[in-house]
Length: 238
Figure 1: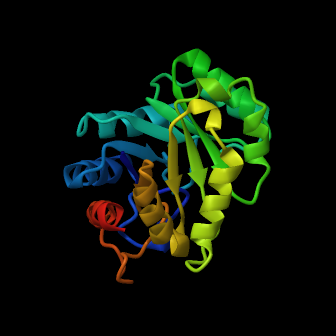
Figure 2: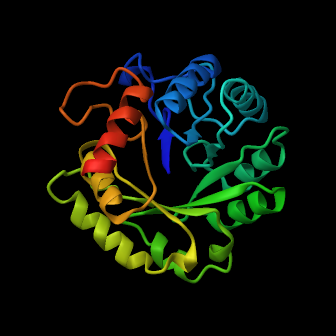
């Protein structure tokens, strides 16, 4: 599986290719799926470009994307979108349109409560296990771990010379990951080396403007579709 991560917490300062409105996210999603992406991860945005868990914005974003593609669509529940854990839960409970899955960063305060609420709603949970945090340790002892949809092994090391070693260390920390499928990905300078490693290991991966703005040859990517097309080549031959 190659998931496309359309925008992440990036803003207009990261370039015009980053989709920030529901319509541009839908256009980008359709092109990325046509290029070979089989799953989507998106950060719904307020009109000023800030990540949000707003039920109105979420419904508008999911509606626009689902009108264009039929693959599963997931969203973030990152603490930066709603720092207060109780308020984050209230936001999620107020969703009128549900994503197929949502990522939960396991090192963040309130992560297990967020995951439990999503599971109760019937939303799949992507357990975000970041390198450089205690997330793998927390996940190892979590009673919710066997119930998640998949594990996102997220390599935060952006140095291309060390990202692969960091990825292997993270996978070692995860161990059997409670038998859940693992999606391995990196970011910025580490994105392409880690994607190639995922290909060699036969793990799912993701690519998109959330994770990297540059193509493997160093040119600036013009779209998520361009990144997906390049990612599939790197994944198969890396």
